[in-house]
Image (cartoon, rainbow, N blue to C red):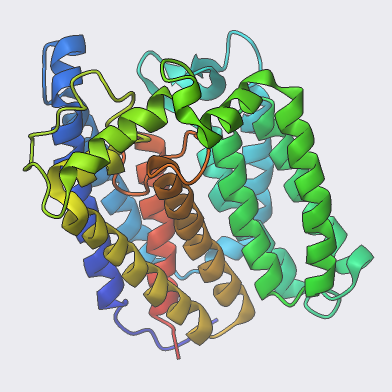
Length: 365
């Protein structure tokens, strides 16, 4: 397929690099105390994050210059590989347990999280499948059930780790792709009701999930247990006010707020940079999502359009859930803030995906 290629979306590039730069600054600020306590080096986390940022930027520029329809050829193989990794990670002695979930493959502190790869592989495959089956996408049995079956299998494997956060992001982004492809709203609505019942069943089946729900509804009922993270997060956000306590001046990062450099980094942003700092990050994400959706609407073919929607969906759903958890509007799920939180697998994969999105923007009409 030979088409005229223009420059990538400048707004998107600027927003990506600004978010990434703010993320590196905040990873250092949020983790310096913890890093010095654990490793004797306050730059431990930011050095590793910087390394992954460099690798991710390199991958982003490669995918930005590789014609996006090439990924259509590898979508099925990529999905199969990711399914294999999700099975392997469940094997005791092979998968590494961190934070109570067997979600990692690797040695020592270096590892990959297969569920992060599955997010991108799933939207890639769905974009290929649905762009090739648009004539039957409105059919429940022929158009909707096959992709939902694949999605359900991946969801089940991720939940066996268990990792509800990654599973929720993957499902949310994939459903956005399915809806955008032309699936009937009444079909999706009926399945949504079934999904709610299933979600309630999953919560009731695991006592720790039920405790998270009750801790979310009334965190002060168990301030040293299930409500601890939310309470400490709110204690960080509250004093930040309009302009914050100042960069590096967080109090909650002194071993009060768990995971200040990962899941709850937005709370440190709000504490140190205030409402203005938090709103700035959200605005940058809004610009990224806006330009991504504009790219999707102007893509030259349905595969590019659906793939752009899926990549934007991963970012948007993850930001929505992370910020919702940090401000106490959603139960704790263990989801990082894209491009901002510490995490090598997530950062590298997101930058790679954003490179694909930038390449699609180069062909926008």
